[in-house]
Amino acid sequence: MKLCFIGTGYVGLVSGTVLSDLGHEVVCYDKDPCKIESLNKGICPIYEPGLEEIIKRNYNIRLSFTNDLKKALENAKAVFIAVNTPEAEDGNADLSFVYQALDNITQVYKEGTIIIKSTVPPKTCSKVKEYLSKFNVNLNVISNPEFLKEGHAIKDFIAPERIVIGAENEDSKNIANEIYKPLINRGHKILLTDTTTAEMIKYASNSFLAIKVGFINEISNLCEIVGANVEDLSYGIGLDSRIGEKFLKVGPGFGGSCFPKDIMALSYLAENYGDPLLLVKTVIQSNNARIERMVQKILNVFGGSIKGRTLSALGLAYKAKTDDVRSSPAIAILKRLKELGASIKAFDPKAMQKAESVLPEVKYCHSIEDAIKDTECIVILTEWEEFKNFDYEYYKDTVKGKVIIDLRNILNKNSLNSYKYISLGRS
Ligand code: UDX
Image (cartoon, rainbow, N blue to C red):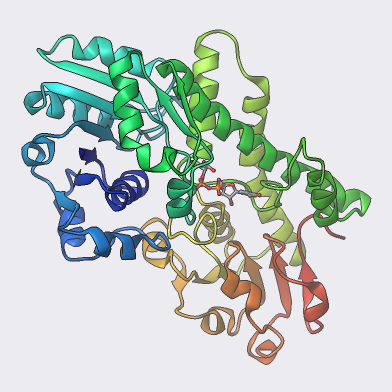
């Protein structure tokens, strides 16, 4: 089946590429000619483990890239909209890119199926259906939210724990079943529901996960006060199958292009209906407050002021295995430390280029050794394996101050005899 993807970001590029690998003919369109040019030169605009190989395996066989929309839409059985839906000023989801895509698509694509893969508020598909009735088109509208995690996206797409389809008629359901047949035949679950419920599943899923992360982060604060160990606590509560071990890893706060945006949009939506989601509102406040709490933790090491101090920042991405710095707690913390007068040397295995555009005011180093050299304190902000395996003892004489503040709890205090080691939720 020929499929067209509008948007070659983290979701569109991964989904389109993997669907081509599963046997569909996929044309990925992006309005940004630079992205398409890079992709046609074999340069992947995002870092996602395993993605480049799958693109290479399918490129110009079942997978192509273009910014010629007419060509992309020609004979497409379905068009996926995978454009970004950023947070608007008021917290609502900004759907302008979705509607721009619809306006462009309907000029040339009159018959077929629109599949909204972008994360959109509940009732968006219904509104899109109404919007399309203004045009002389006959288009089904399906909701197909994505659940892939950056850094794990290929596995999440090839082996999804569920495929969620919101469809309003049999024809749409048949199209969706046809597209995902290769995965359904491997036993992966497909949930067919209405579009509003499908849209809600996405927001409820991300909000619940955000609340779970926010919960362990707050519990770790209390662990520090009472002298408990949050790592043992996390393991201990996670052994309860009703809780589960995942998303109980303490950190500097959740970030990325989804959690912060999605919980704001859900909170905004509920507020607008006059029935606020208090839990969701609270986790937004809790996560925002965590940045200042992490900054304070660092200040405390220097008696309350870091003016004139030189710190090493290991990690810029919002989490490991991605180059994405959107809503990264690392970036937010470093901006605050700069405001408070610190000099910063930073290193991240993948996110440096993206970080430089949002955080020009730090010195970017090209190795861990270089980033820690002559600094008074090492702050670990992202849980890269490289930072976990690095031999800090071996380089102890290259640093000025032997202090490590581990905001991801990835190191073992017993292997850092020469350092003062500070972490989260562990006395
Ligand atoms: C998330 C959802 O998991 C995914 O289903 C959805 O499609 C997109 O949003 P992603 O943002 O890629 O995926 O990252 P995820 O691994 O979910 O982590 C989100 C944030 O929570 C990151 O900042 C991460 O560092 C943080 N986190 C996650 C923790 O602090 N502790 C954890 O135990 C898990």
